[in-house]
Length: 341
Image 1 (cartoon, rainbow, N blue to C red):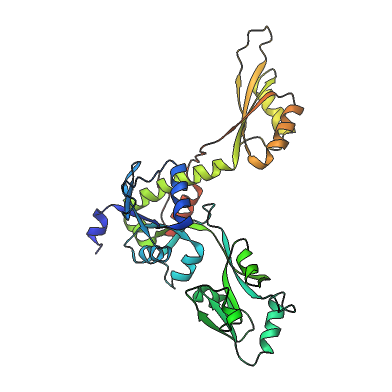
Image 2: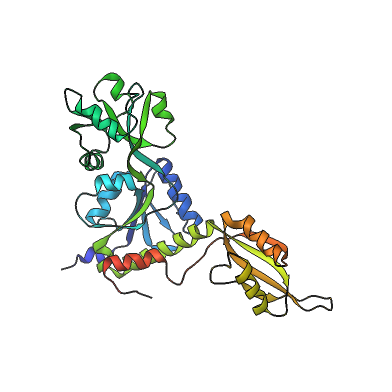
């Protein structure tokens, strides 16, 4: 029998309670049109006025994973590194969005700088075989690190550390470390060096959901769609620009064919073309509007000019909504649910 209290209560989304992940999560939701309203900064609960059925909770990143896993919270935003460390062997958690464009870092193996002969994993394996005892690896991510180390031909032992890892080799309680690396400056300051091919996990912020609640609670499914709808629409828009240009031609179809033949980026489905109302006698002016990737702007403007475009105007795009968010469709497939319109 389903838990009626969970069926009737409001849906919950847990965000990191402090730090950069918290700030970036709030910034993302705000940019997506889902601004979090938290009148008292000391409270661990907030609301999104545009989603009145959703309650925002603030937890530690590791607790977010545990809460989503046991179903006390339906959704959460946390780091992929924390998720992979805390999720366990169950399949109760579903990753709904795997790239929220913040929280980027990498879990890597790092060795002391004086190990000049150890530049890669192959050399580390040779080094470990020459050591009198098992290679000692200090880490805050024992589960993820163990899964990686088990794939190597190395006799090792893990040392779980809560505090600063970078000092472990220098004070002698570990030989190497497995730690998160962003710029790498902290490692350099402590005379450590990441192995060139010692990447254990590439991490970033992810949106996760409780699989059972998504399958059994229609409100959870509805909230998932709205979250993914606005997050995807915003993130997709940040990578694109709207380009407008005036162009002479005998008809919209003639101009469209010119664009299809001569331009490498004709827009999302194609250009939008409309007549320009002018005072002069020549009526054959049309306005062309196309959406282009931001990194293709210079190329696009050059191509439009080459086929007669003038008065080119470029504007940012706030949102690009698809007929159905691709990640929502992927979520339904993972749940074994037919598409819900």
